[in-house]
Image 1 (cartoon, rainbow over the protein chains, first blue to last red):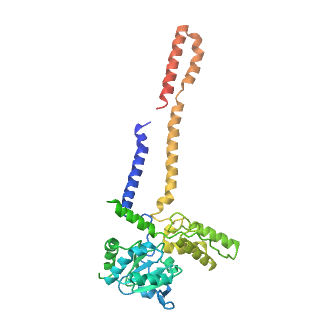
Image 2: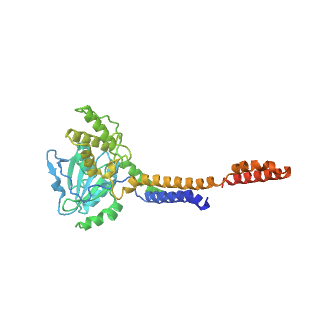
Image 3: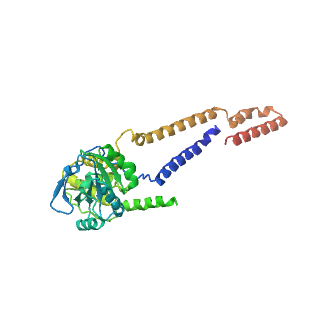
Length: 183
Length: 178
């Protein structure tokens, strides 16, 4: 038998080891393979009717997310520790004049209102999605998640995980500018 | 020092997860067939949060919401395909255990076939090579053929023949391994 053929398993093993090494290095640098791509990129915001967080009975629909300028839709809840971690950064973004709409997701209304009163309220508008059904329509699978919605109400980007300066500068800001936002 | 950023990322990643609530859903089904269908569909949908658990088996909040939605849609009279499509439209092809054939999923569909083909080729090639060596005369048949002529040889010649034949046998059995 050709002796060279005996090296095939070794070569296959080395190729597999190299592939694993590459991905593990990428993971170590912040690439999370469990992140899902949103199925709604390029699609309009789903149709909804939700109450305001602080004023029960006041109904908003999808038209509030079509502003002529790009906006951020932030999905958050008080039971979500990462939401707390990113909250200060959202305050910073709001202070820069970026319109952030909050979607309070499967949460206790009173706790959420208290949270905004104590930690500051970055949201130009707060929607209350108590049973998480808009979340489901948006393909939300954890909190926090932040969507970039352009001036025509089309979803352009979804970030799962905390919003911070690195993500904003690298991922969101270029798109935000591309769709006509000035920051 | 480099470990700190990755540690924070790990911790933050952990916080991203939903708390696990062990919940027992109580749904009223109109028929056994509907209940059967519900079980079938929830086992065919993958939980987007806990990766590789079906929404039937997962305790995450999102899986519970998706089960509720499946139940609602079933009650509205939607079919299995419609419900799977509903979830795919929101969570992408990841959510179904049976991804459609697209350029990026082609390897999933053709991969197993490829393995069968490679395996079959190897087996065919190997059996051909072995068949070729079997056709060559083995020492045993040579011995049988020479047996008849033994009587015609002198004792000395017979001893020498036996010696030669054992040498050949040894070489052949020793060489077979390589």
